[in-house]
Length: 207
Length: 207
DNA sequence: TTAACAATGTGAAATAATTAACATTTTTCT
DNA sequence: AGAAAAATGTTAATTATTTCACATTGTTAA
Image (cartoon, rainbow over all chains, first blue to last red; front, side, top):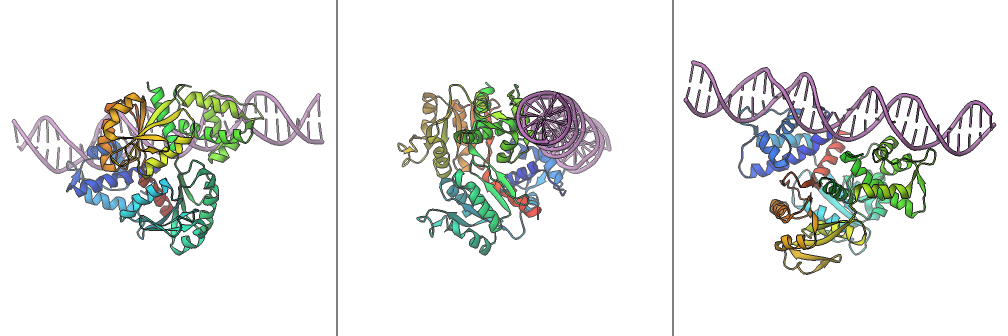
């Protein structure tokens, strides 16, 4: 059970969101093929993932929705919750901040940062905005462990370094510029341009 | 050369962006380990990807930056260019539209759509905004082949269906809700919440 | 009661992606 | 000139992920 594949972690997060909707609708049990349909993957993959986390459903009834939600929570959430910050409160930063501000999950955005003085001191979706020079102080004060970068690409390396020095443990880089961090920092990069180019490629070749 | 791995396609897109910067700085040649450093992957992987597209560098000098840029373009771009639309011009939609509006690449955003009448008729980063009811007409008129969805999750399935019916060939879904499309439509889904939960998981377990 | 069905759980096979290992070759240095 | 160094290109090995195939077992219906 210990070493779950990265892909399984991603899917568990997605299953949980789907399951929460099902739970809200009053569903008590769910079959692997129902989950599979929602996520458009195969039922086997669903069962394998669930197997990997050691849960076992009821033959012929499927999985108990509530139990599965709770178990996935035990696996992927941190008991105490984790604080996150968003650096760069442009369009993308606001989109992400907005996504999270309402939800009461184990992940909460504890601060946002920007260079622009006109933004500093304001609140975005109820979250305080600080100047990036305050990154070291605020990250320590508010026990922030994860940074989300939504700054212009050219600023990414400098911001990444600041965040790492400030003691961040994980970094989610949404800028188009790859950054380097020490090995003990978990880094996830995502690049919208690449994704779109990929879609374009497969549209082109699959026809 | 025909069937490139998905992961290779993604990396080629990234190599190209890095190479364009290098080219702009006047670099003529580049080594696999230099590209690798920028993307923080291994030099072998870079060489393998480049091998797969049939390019061959110069021993001891590395790869010709310009040639490699052009070849990657031949592989992943469509000769004539591809038109794209963004549906949902909230924060995320604006972020994406803004990313692309300046650049003159083979991908161009030809329209954006929203439900809100206050947005319809305006321009966002120089792109016309239409009402979603105009999706069928505009997609045909402007020969749009790819849709990017940045609407609230609950609207995603309906919008996806509209886009598919309108004749879209590829769909990039940035809502947290998975959608179903026919097999011949290339679908790419990305979910920021999942990414953040994944980072949180590895931060939690790697310590 | 018993046969047919429909679901889970999982070992084993297949596929996809990465990494190791190394032959080859150009350049540089002595 | 010859040896050492530094790079590419590629086969083979490894690792990661997905899928197949099927044993198992509640449930339903005849």
